[in-house]
Length: 110
Image 1: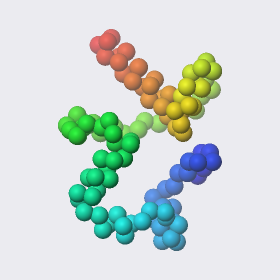
Image 2: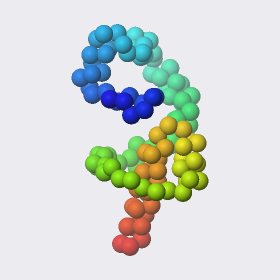
Image 3: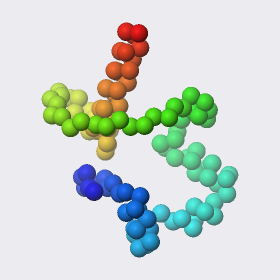
Image 4: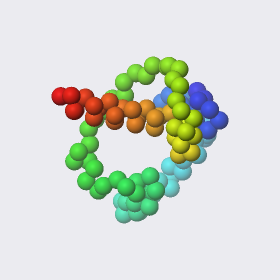
């Protein structure tokens, strides 16, 4: 399933088939050969991991995604431009910002 030119979503069955066909670009042999220290080093150097506290698991909560609804929404061009400038996934980030806003508003109301 294709969302745009850069994002692809596959079911577990499709991923297994792709791996079997050799279409996976992941070097599993290299990953399996890494030591725990090497894995920790690589994780630590990942820019997406940079601001994650080492004790993040202490406050982590299991969250199952709820179903989403397709809507048409008009937003200011400045808002769309800013989120798009952050890179791929801007609609997901807009959803996340709105989700935090709603949760905080519910907390204040009690």
